[in-house]
Amino acid sequence: MKTLTYAMAAMAALALCACSGVDAKAKKPDREKQIAVQSYTCHQMNLTDMFKMFKELGVKNVEICGGKLGGDYPSVGAGPNRKPEHLQFRKDIAKKSDSTLISYGVCAPKDEKGIKAVCEFAKELGLKFVSTECDPKTFPIWEKYCGEYGIKMCIHNHARRDKNPNYKFWDYNWVAKEIAPYKNIGVCADNGAWECSGLNSVEGAKVLGDKIFIVHLKDQKKFNVRNSPAVIYGTGEVDVAAFLKQLDKQGFDGYLIIEHGNDPIEAKRDIISKDMDFIRKN
Image (spheres, rainbow, N blue to C red):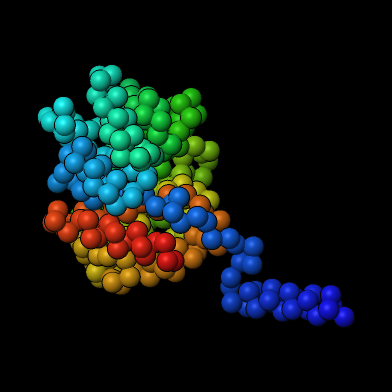
């Protein structure tokens, strides 16, 4: 009798999940492992000082972009650079901060030589991803070198550009069609840029599905305002919690990268800390 009662209860729970639109098989991933920060968040700092702060905040995963290395190389850029000592310095910065370099971008190499150089740079640093906004004509080249170097290229999106109708990366429907043929090309989903463009984050996640490789997680002060500033998660007009739930439902367990570059440097520590807490709680 107890077995029958338990079975009936389980069936009722499954029915409830179906009615509410929740995937009963969906499992919330380990949020701590998902948390990452885009170095552009602290673009006013060099990498040496930035990673010191990341260690104090407990940031374990970092996506790097431009800026300066700092330390022994105060004037050396933090982007692709072929000198071995500069590459090693980047690795040492991350190791000292107990963090892992996961990705590089956003970049836009224009030809095969540039694409190969970025892939080599990513491979040498042990990166898993490169985020770009490259001409779709270069996608076959990316597919080739990503396969060769064991990385993934992720199409990033900024907000729509009303004065440049040729910029289409903001439209996740367009992106989904362009990347569909490729195994090694997916998306670095900037949900805040979608919302600034008048699009819905949850619908974007549904459209792109397992083509979302990494996420630039955002909340924005205003919806459908192209230049609306990023704000601390849960304080703007983007339903960040609903977006995370949809990603969970789809089985996404990749990096949720905090990118918050529009505030003064003295505010960064508090912003990153609060955003990390929001991710943990949702």
